[in-house]
Image 1 (cartoon, helix red, strand yellow):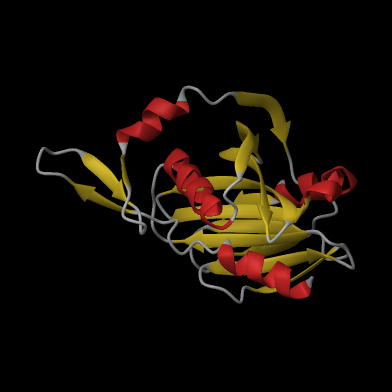
Image 2 (cartoon, one colour):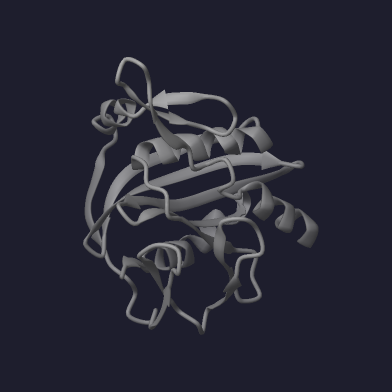
Length: 207
C-alpha cells in the first residue's frame, strides 16, 4: 500500500499542470499544456459563470494553530499539528505533504510561481488525472469563500491500479502564483474522514 500511495503522489505532481501563456498571430491569448493541447485564456471566463458559489463562509478551525508558509508563492496553511504530520514534498512541485496521524488520509500543497485562471488550472488538473486514472470524474465543483479568499473547490474520483481514490481540494491563483491544496484517500473512507478533510482544507490562507 505504501508504494501505491507514493506512486499516486508522484502521478499527481503538478508537472504538466502549469501551462504557459502565449499569444497567437491573431492576438488571442492561449494556455499551452505540456501534453501539446491548449485552451483559450478566455475559456476560463466563459466557464466561470457555470460554477455555483457556496454561500457559507468557511473558516479555519481554532485548533489549527501552526501556520505553515509557502516559500514559492504567498499561500499559507494553518495546521493542527496534534492531528497531522507534515514534511517537505518529495516530488516535483509538491512543496509540502501531509498525513493524518496513523490514518489513511493524506494531503499535499502543490505550489508554483506561474499564474493562470483558476478554472484553467482545474481543467488541466482533471485532464492530467485522467492520464493515470482514465475513469477520473469531477463529482463536485463550486466556489467557496475560505478565510476571506475566493477558492475553487473540487472533488474528483478515480481508480488507480485497481484502487478507488477520492481527491478533494482547493484551487487558487493570484499574481503570486497557483496553489492546489488537496487531500486524498480511498473512496470508501471519505465519509469516515469528512470532518478531518474539511478542517484541514479550511486552513488555507494567504500571507
